[in-house]
Length: 173
Image (cartoon, rainbow, N blue to C red; front, side, top):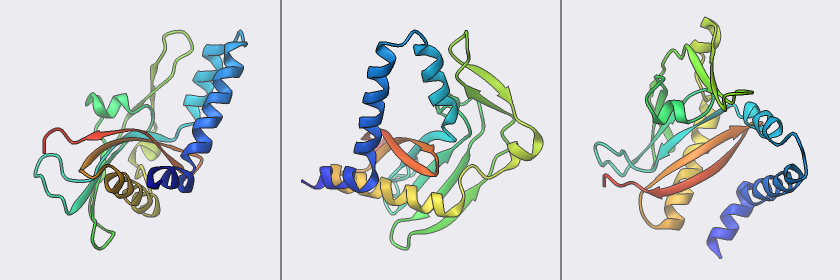
């Protein structure tokens, strides 16, 4: 079916199988927390994307919000994130709002998570390059097409690949 084909094309199936294999290994490992924290530290960015603008209701755009570290910092409003707006029809970036990020939330060794300061150069960097922004927008549009309605998608970026963590309807539309 269409959804399975989409997952196969994007590599999500292999990612999920990898997570399952890692989970099985960790079940028998005494270093469960350390290994999971190590995996999470490798994620470059996590945040949210919308296949329609959640405030204006404009269904002709994709809105992407991105920050360094765990997505909880973006969703909770603890950091100011980059925002990218793209035209669905033209697959073109129409607006970028780049934000200075002075800290990032990451898994901690004893507390579960913790904040790490970013130096000026790292904090001023654009969170996703233009090619990655367009690639993520295409994935979000594919999810919308499969689900048949505008979606709110949580994503992760790891080793120059995107992973869809979850998707749901945009509740404000």
